[in-house]
Length: 100
Image 1 (cartoon, rainbow, N blue to C red):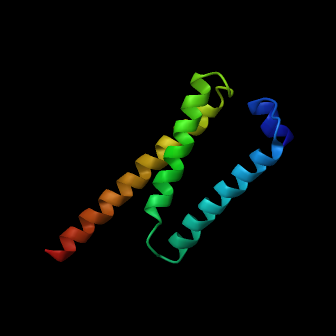
Image 2: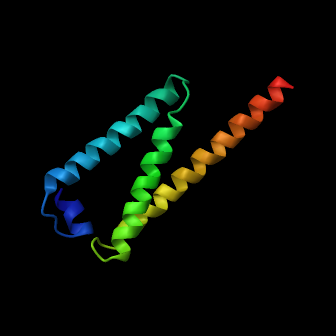
């Protein structure tokens, strides 16, 4: 927590930071387990989570509520959304070729 606060600035409610961290880890674990079991990825969960983080990062950095370091997270969310979309298109393309 100390290094996070050093990078992002002081926080009033550290429990909220911990909760967001646990939720993020839970979502990541869901993706990891689905991937290892070769199951379908929960696309709605992935898109909704990434878009939510992206919107919050940009909105609150722009309004100067949170530190600009959060734009790094926004960039990571953009990369995740791009990768998710790429793999979705690739998967659908491969499925279409198999059905023809």
